[in-house]
Image (cartoon, rainbow, N blue to C red; front, side, top):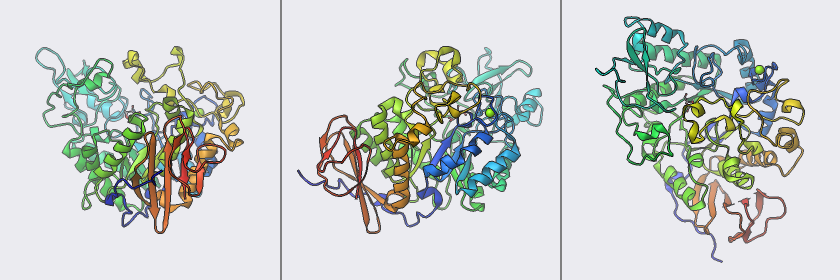
Length: 535
Ligand code: GLC
Ligand code: MG
């Protein structure tokens, strides 16, 4: 056997000069408030419920909680339709409860990131109510209104991300308004200076209250090309893809003016101490990397990187993508990795539990800030939602495509008591079918559980600065294996991941610190579905 060799040493993946910020060595945990824990017994998770489980989150070993939207909302898109950017949705609690959550989190060393939804508001937001009331209302221009074409059809060919035209006809004032998502989510007009100022005030409001940062929803959407030209057709579209994919979103997304606004968000965040901006950005590598901005004019700290979610679970392909991603970063750009979310299929549903363990090891040993989605630490798999319990509007807009997001939004199973310790009532979505055995209490008591592995990985990452902020280099490895090194100061760790269910010979003989499997690791071998961290 030849020893593992370094494929190449990528200088950019070496230690940055300054990797001391909390969000560089820390780990983000996403909480979907509706489904985390219900404090008031209405079957819907809420802030009091989250407070009651803060010890659980702190004990996991993560550093920050990103809360999906908690603002007043008619819930057409479960909070991503905001009716008041500076309030708390009554289903979730009130501002005093939020302040308590923030204080209690901070007491445990946990930061809180809120979800800022700048592209669109709810159609029930007072701003939109005013805007739609008449063509000469001062807030008319806070949204994007246009006349019909002479034949009465929409102003251009843009398609909503949820399917169908992105334009909704408004009978009362005889114009169309733009909505990149549901018609209940009218797009805001960021070219209007008053709107922009009002939204900047929203960020200040929460920063002043002490929140540690924001995840910014669909940031690359927020400005549209001047004149709203038609988007070009996508030559690669096939009928099994979403309606959205029929067009290339050239003129509706990723505009230079959106980058400028993102730099303004950052300038504001930098006036406060230690605050973090994470941008939701889906783009090819080269355009994705631009959302870091420049050293002189930085944009978001972390443009979310969804590669682990979007790529096939295949060692060669993933390895190439990881290298391309890391290569694409500007020198000041700190990487990040996301493995699951309220929008994406569950990792364990996609690759099976054994590989979900390998995936967790990958997520928590790669160079870059990891974001971990609630429930993935239990390896919740794909949940079939009975037709009468489906809630996600994305499903209803394109029912044939199996793109409903409810399966990843099922409530956290805490224990084997009625309603899984989640609520005193039947929850808004069903649990994972195996909740009676796959729950926090059961896995807490089982040293070989996914929860135990996740905690062990997080503890190791905390203990070994090589894993959090260390340099990284990919190693040549046999087919089916991802291998890399992480190094900081004089400490080097090797990570070997078997992405197959067969044993694979790999030359290693150093000290294993952690395996994804029970039993003794065998030198020179990766057992089926085994991931190893070696010293
Ligand atoms: C983001 C959210 C998703 C929401 C959409 C519209 O992608 O993560 O849940 O539906 O934006 O706000
Ligand atoms: Mg509740």
